[in-house]
Amino acid sequence: MPTSDTLQLSLGPVLFYWTRERYAAFYREAADWPIEIVYLGESVCSRRRDMKLDDWLGLGRELAQSGKRVVLASQTLIESEADLRDLRDLRKLCDNGEFTVEANDQSAVQRLSAAGLPFVAGAALNLYNTAAIGVMARAGMQRWHAPVEMSRHDLARLLADCRAEGLEAPCEVLAYGHLPLAWSSRCFTARRHQKPKDRCRFVCQQYPEGLALRSQEAREVFTLNGIQTLSGACQDLRHEVPTMAELDVAVARLSPRAEGMAEVVVTFDAARRGTLPAPDPLALVDAGLCDGYWHGRPGMDNTRAEATS
Image (cartoon, rainbow, N blue to C red; front, top):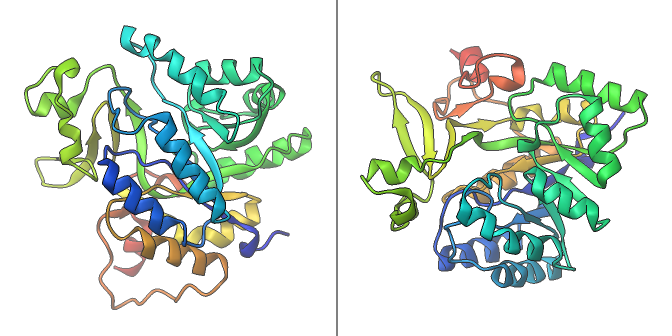
């Protein structure tokens, strides 16, 4: 039976649009964090061009020198004429010759598979069954990210079925961060500022943790991030780390936030080492957290908050 200390931690790609200076400062700090894997790259919007591939490769080399395994993330939604022209960038990304690539759409899968290159299958590929996982494994997949809305019970059954069929590709789970829920041809952040998508003036850079979308009851139900819609609350599965280990999950992914990320990483590192402090029933529960999908409930539910109330 695996133990929590065999679980690796990964730092997902930054989903929000930051400045070059902010990226550089963030990854300088991340080089010293107790994580094994770091994902780099722009996976949301092709218009975000502050960072070129050479910039990401430069950061990757620095992180690799610090002992991190670096993965380059591909774009998730390629649907416009401009995006099709940017397939040249996808080819360069896949053929970078240094780092493994996370394929977040089928064009990246096709390119990597045709070149005989191993890849990580991102959550947006929607691998819900052994048939899909088998197809990806034969194409060269070396690790796959479980769909973010998959419950622990469904994941347990799927992993058991994979073992029974000899599919040994390791599984990764989003353990912390805003849940990526949808992508659109529209940019809702630009629309909020009454600007067209192709002349957005990069207004999403004003929101380093996304733009909160609240209900009439003032509850943060979603987070707008350009063409991407995220959950309003951050999924937090730090107390589920032992369960992940029992399920044979290989990697727990932590999605970057603009503030407080070092503390998040330290907390998850403590959790996998079995030193996470017991929850204080008198302490206030962070209302900005959720874990509903993991427990087979609506995603915005916070079962730990309910247990302490």
